[in-house]
Amino acid sequence: MRVNTGSFDHAFEACKAALSRSPAGLFTDFDGTISHVASSPAEAVLADNAAGALTRLSESLALMAIVSGRSADDARALVNSEQVSIIGNHGLERITSFGRVVHPAAQAQVDEIAQAVANIQQELAHDSITVGALFENKGLSASIHYWLTHDPDAARLRILELVRRESHERGLLVTEGRLVIELRPTTPVNKGTAITEVIREMRLRGSVFIGDDVTDLDAFIALKSLSSDDFAGTSVAVLSAETDPRVRDAADVAVDGVNQCVLLLSRLGEYFSKTG
Image (cartoon, one colour):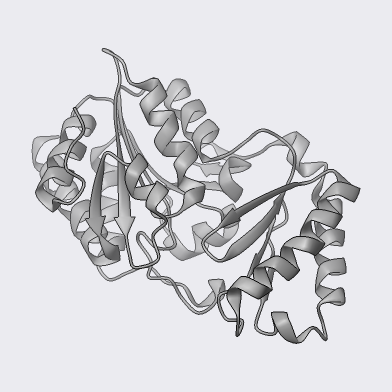
């Protein structure tokens, strides 16, 4: 039965139930979930009290992991806790206590991604429509953010035209998130396949995934597909004024914004530190 997405208490109870199925793991996105969306990716920081909540959960659960479109190194620097595992570039790389793992097929397309971004940036250098666009080469993928442009709708169309051209010529995948267009390797990896692999490797019996953007939908869907008598999964949408309706519709439960998300993590950390 679907849980009411509008209640913080329902979200807490649903997450508590899933994470009580030991061994359990909690996965969360970074931007828009445990960090307020900043003017540029470089300005993002952990929200107040998030670091303590992550640490407590990492001590109480079998796994506490950040799953981000950011590079793994970038996410690691922002979280700065060796106890928290990092799944970066939408699942193309991982940093855990066992070391770093990079998808070999993705590594093979690093040069193509770099050249594609350079070409697009050069072509848009004097384009008035895309003034304010931010170009972010993350090695295994690249993002072009356009929320600071004067007309985001027009900027999206202009950028998308060039991104599609480069992706066609170089055999890359184009995806979109909230006011961002991304170039990725064609490797069939996303947040959903990434958490599925980890859940199976660790033989987790319960998991929670927290996200706020359409790039998190793959993870929401993955948890539903894994649900069985032996596994309980709960997906949590972090809502804002910009939330795509598909994110809320796909989630099991929801919380209102980053502050409530951090409160949810803190409450879960308190609960499991006492019961674990």
